[in-house]
Image (cartoon, rainbow, N blue to C red; front, side):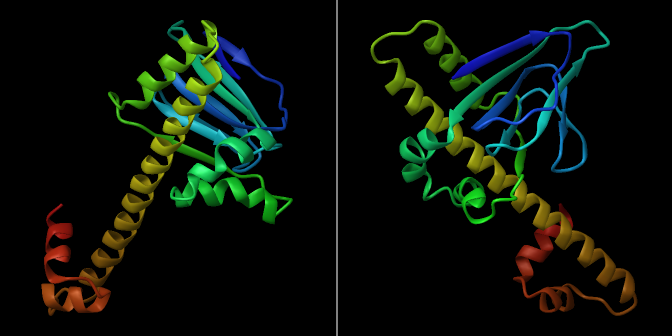
Length: 208
């Protein structure tokens, strides 16, 4: 199911549902009240919020500027997701693990929050999905399956990019601490040896 929420002010009742879901911030920003983080998560325009079945959440939107907030949602029943999409996600490691987690942990309440660049193609894919869903033809289900799979693969790709950046930032913090602790004797070679990275990689990382 593809659905569109358009409003400048809304507050959902906290709820759970038997779907894997994707909520895309198509226009302006909104918030998610989530049990996972026990607080509000800010979802900006071009962000995706992805959740597992039965995760508790509520969407909250309040545009002070009176600009319309638009959220585009994809709801996929659990059995449909496992039958139609899971076999194609085996190469998408992070998303594959995310999908399977509730099967291994019945108490799992996990979500993914991922940000996309302004002109990322995922937005066009989502627009096409809405158009196809509202103008159904005999091929609509097959077309939507292909579009949704492409959207999922882009989500996995962007999650990988974000995780790599987080790891890099953590490494930068550790390098800075090492430099500060050895300020009188530190060398590029010493840093590379300490963290087991190539000299050129450390040099480029410090420059950045």
